[in-house]
Image (cartoon, rainbow, N blue to C red):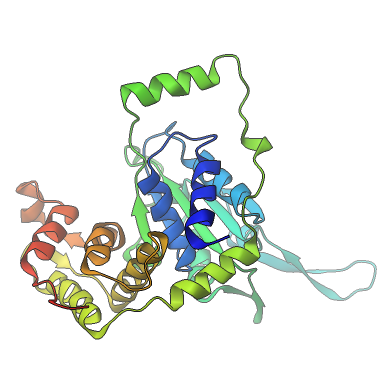
Length: 313
């Protein structure tokens, strides 16, 4: 099975239970194949949880949903050391994080202390409990959700946490035809989510991640990425630009996008397509820019229009 066949199978499998654009699924797959994490920000009822569960089922990975609430403790996420009453020895009790696909549901409803328990896992692929380090299973992806319209009882993610997310996406409302199709699908018919079968394996995903690593990113493209990211740090509308981690994510995202479309090398179009999804959530607008109705996405659009596209790749 070649690359495009595997991507198509995953897309089609997810769309058995969720009506969404191919672009949305491809963005999530770009994050997975780049060993990155996804922040899904949208209103309730759009299908955020369904997307994550369908992804996990489609790629044959273990799945764990963590409902983030104000009383959730870091040890609930990472695990803890306990005394085995039978032997008297210390034993590590695994937390929910010890799975391949993690749904961090309503991540902004838990305390900053518990939010920060994900930092090491998302960056290093490991956790540390009582000075002992434990490797997380591979592939490992955190897909977090949050509601943009509720603020009471929430704890906004700090910049350091946002920077750990590879991309931020929104599913958006369906169109009229899509919504009619959704109604038809649910008219007296139970959800088929539990019936989804894997169309690729976790081992296939790891192999595809390695293949993405080998997608060619020329010096000209790397300079193009660096120029775009550099402009975010000097833009008059931005208080905070993208970090070097953001630059790495943009390069890797462009490589994953090229891979998904069947190319062996990155083009400027791959970089332009991924730029708003990878960088927008890492930027902080100045107050006066907000008064002008500027958005991070609009700033990035202006930057990509301004930065000269390389003549050759």
